[in-house]
Amino acid sequence: MSTGREIRLIEEDDGWWSAIDEEAGVASQGSTRQEALANLDEAVELTNEARDDDDTPAPEPDAPWFDS
Image 1 (tube, rainbow, N blue to C red):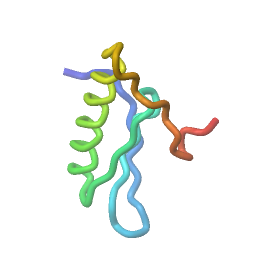
Image 2 (image 1 turned 135 degrees about the vertical axis):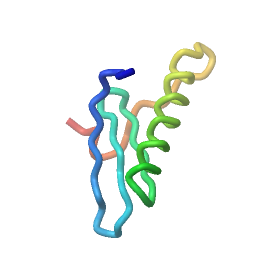
Image 3 (image 1 turned 120 degrees about the horizontal axis):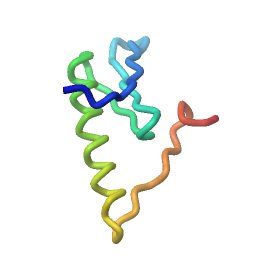
């Protein structure tokens, strides 16, 4: 089932992979493409849970790739 997410997947110079979900404002990395995507899924889930919790606001993205 598709969630309709658009994800940027980048192979870095050091061989690691970065996965970025700009709509959610979340990024992660891994030593393989699959690991980066799995880590991103976990990061997005945790961020969404924190945003849904009124007692614990999630921080706004401050990574340079989210700058407009």
